[in-house]
Image 1 (cartoon, rainbow, N blue to C red):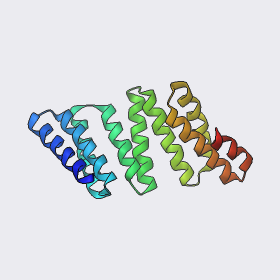
Image 2 (image 1 turned 60 degrees about the vertical axis):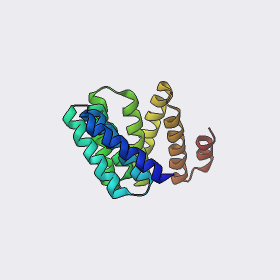
Image 3 (image 1 turned 90 degrees about the vertical axis):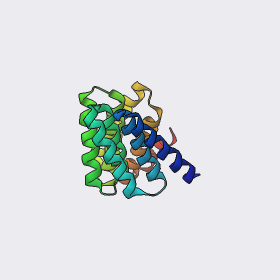
Image 4 (image 1 turned 90 degrees about the horizontal axis):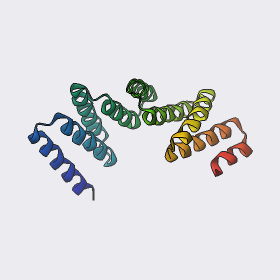
Length: 168
């Protein structure tokens, strides 16, 4: 029930505001943004995510800033804006040495390259990330990369190799 979800997250945000804990508030607002997006309220979702980002920056929590940027990148409709957000998130994950964040963000950049038709870049990223994701045991990213490599092969007209990736 989307109304119940909306009510619950609004209650969480108000409780966090009353607590005075800025990190808790930023976290609650981040989740509000995600809920709003899933409810189809994209403009409000972006505003909530930007508010969350600002508060996390204020608290100095770089990892959380990167996580919010990842969420924002996933919901913007302009590929160049999405790429800029993913690239900023990746720089932050590199700075804080968070391997999983780097791998997931890089896979999203590979997917974006594929959507934009940059097949060589997508292939290079998917191959590199697939190896890293397997090493780290990030199954969802492994699956995303295999699917991406299958789509690369389809774009190249190599359907036999595509099937190999898509059936793994």
